View 1 (spheres, helix red, strand yellow):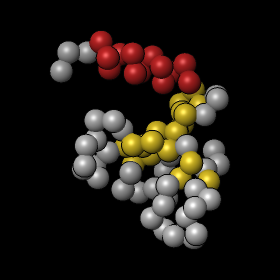
View 2: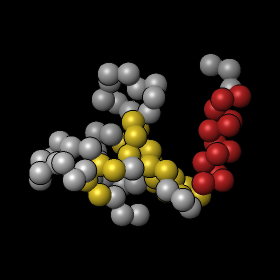
View 3: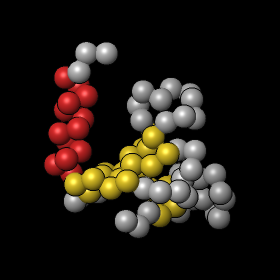
View 4: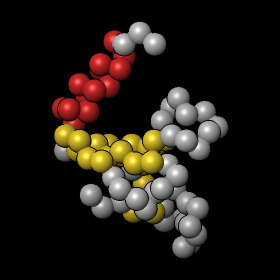
Length: 74
């Protein structure tokens, strides 16, 4: 997977990377995951370690996972 920084970053380290979104339930905490939706795969990474490992899942597997979460009673 290739990710690119926003064209407005001007080389800054703290900038938005196109494609990545923070989990909607993360609130203001920095302990969360970010996802990137691509045509064939979904990337998942730790928001605290943006240069670290990225997990990649086929879109169908990701959809099944998210559906299972929605059905779960917390």
